[in-house]
Amino acid sequence: MTMLVDETVPPHKAAYDFSLFEAMESEVRYYCRKFPVVFDQARGAELYAEDGRMFTDFFCGAGTLNYGHNHPHLKRRITEYLARDGVMHGLDMYTVAKRTFLSRLREQVLAPRGLDHKVQFCGPTGTDAVEAALKVARRATGRRGIVSFTGAYHGMSRGSLAVSGGRRARAAGQVGTADVTFVPYEDGPAGPFDSIGYLERMLSDPSSGLDLPAAVIVEPLQMEGGVYPASADWLRRLRELTTRHGILLIFDEIQSGCGRTGTFFCFEHADVVPDIITVSKAIGGYGLPLSMVLFRPALDVWSPGEHTGTFRGNQLAFVAGAAACELWGQEGFRTTAVVGARRLERFGAELRDSEPALAVRGLGMVLGIDLRAAGGAERADRVQRRCFETGLIVELCGRDDEVIKVMPPLTIDLARLERGLAVLRRAIQAG
Image 1: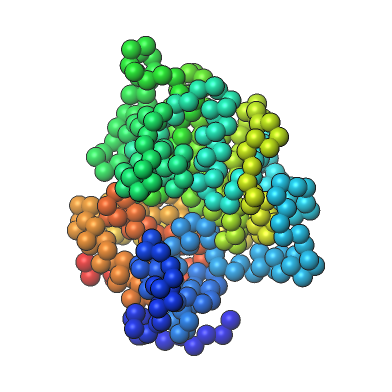
Image 2: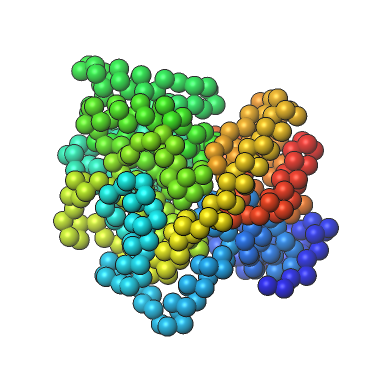
């Protein structure tokens, strides 16, 4: 990639022609309003606009591009597959690409973690995995109720919206929360809460009004809710509680999985094993759609064809996903991710020292900089805009978009990481 990059001139809307997008696309478009340029090329941690301007990417497709843009190992496998006319669409038929992916997944991910879970490929996005997980939990237990947590985000289709906390998204789809009981997460804007103790009281009291649910669904690290990592002790207590009451435990690893938190799955730091795991986003390796549910063999209660989908077998995603699994066997890959995670942790500590009103939370290669008590959502919006104007893409999250979410690629080198952090620091200091 040869680019002529002028990093001194901030991008302006007038420099790009958005007329076709604005004429034809729905008003629902969102990220293009935050980052108003026309992107053309990308490599590693860098995005290039069509006029050659370069942006450091600390957004990574909302966690889809954990391995960066156009990773050479993954790209080589994809181009080789295309060059030999590999099967491009296979529904749930047996293919070489699927066999290779399953083999790599078992060798590099499941077996080293002692997981014997079956694999169900769903439709192409994370919400499809959540829908399937809820469906199989209800099918296996014969119960309908689900327990979810405040701050949760699980997707935009009806079932996943019903177990998500955000009122705005549910209202847009006119989705209610029937059969769903919400409990405060371990931590949140209102502070810590003994949610496990609360659940224990509700489940133990025959007059609590809470029927025995089919499952509890939880993000071991809430991302969209404001970057709130669940503690290892909390996850262990939740696992013990659900086991004792015969409730299935679903861990949503769609955004926190695939190495984002330092281990392949976020729940590993608690040394617990869930009954069901939802995986998507970065599992496709190259930014290609792939979504799946992992569940204990005893929960494989489906009859053939009982849950289907036209795009549940994305062959190119199998190819890229298999190549991404191979990265986990490379010492250099793991070392780079560890170095990056340590630098993010130090950066968070530096911010806290310089401005004690900031709250900083994170795990591995994700950092949440909470401005709720230090300027709030308005300041967070200013920081995001200043970052963009000076060549850095970061996203906001939290109840009111008051948290800056920092998610560089796991593969980012230290020089590029430092460059992006310097831009972010200046934007925060500018207020």
